[in-house]
Length: 419
Image (cartoon, rainbow, N blue to C red; front, side, top):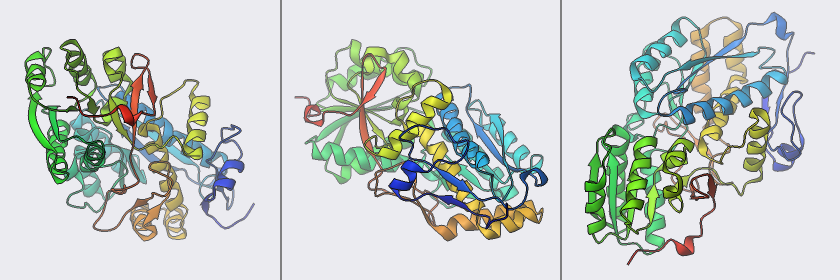
């Protein structure tokens, strides 16, 4: 069948809820559908390669595995509907193991040996930072996922697009919430890796803007097994709440120590507490904590996505940003690939021209709707703005229940200063 080569993202809610491409996972309320129009036989056209580089077996394996699955859902739906102008999408997967050097090596392989059109990945900050100069060296677009360290996009890199929020944006969200709930004094505890240090710096800045004082703070080595000295210092302060910026295993130790020493103050934990690993280790000590999230479970299309995810992988997953961010990055990549100038470059066999056309296509379109954020929010990119998430209408909050198992909407009437 000959047709105009375009990948159309169904924009209206009614269409999203009813149109399902051939081969797409079917659920009665699925809100995500792709229509891909083929031009010529897919069998006669080379595949378009996408590289995924992420932590699949290391400290942040939850983020890497869930994001990869979300990306895979977008790609499989497009392939089932005919690909991009008859070109199937081939995914090449690398496990970076939270190792910056290994991740950088895989990025070079993607660009040079695999002839990939783009790289998707980078949930942990260290590996993401290591991939970035490789993307610049080889002129290949890098769709970075949830790595939150602010300076990764402070100086816009020509081939980088960030899909997750920066740490400063998390800080804007919880500082505003703390202010609205009447908090005036808080304590900080954080690991001394780049994520923890950057998160603490963002917290100080944005809490101060709301007149909230940091009255105690403690850093700790990620390998520390006894955190009682740090936690006792926080308990002795007059802080009305505790903010925690950890990775999963150390975060669980912090929460267990806060519980064992009966600190008795409301706790906010950074988005790392969305990870199942942290909550499994912490168990009941994680119940009641508040976590910033970028997934609004009141959205029908978000609900439908998680139904489809669970059907695809045979397991229930909590509604977090990690599978959604992979899906959104994939959908946006597919949407831009279908632009005529990108298709033309792909079919000319000039991979560098195709990479450039893809990068320029993201900037030309500027805004994209996705499943992250609230209904009115959208990703927005520009030459001088390579983080797509806006400061407003992007965050919701969730809390933990049932011994660390479930993420549920919080009762904010109970989230009040400890006295």
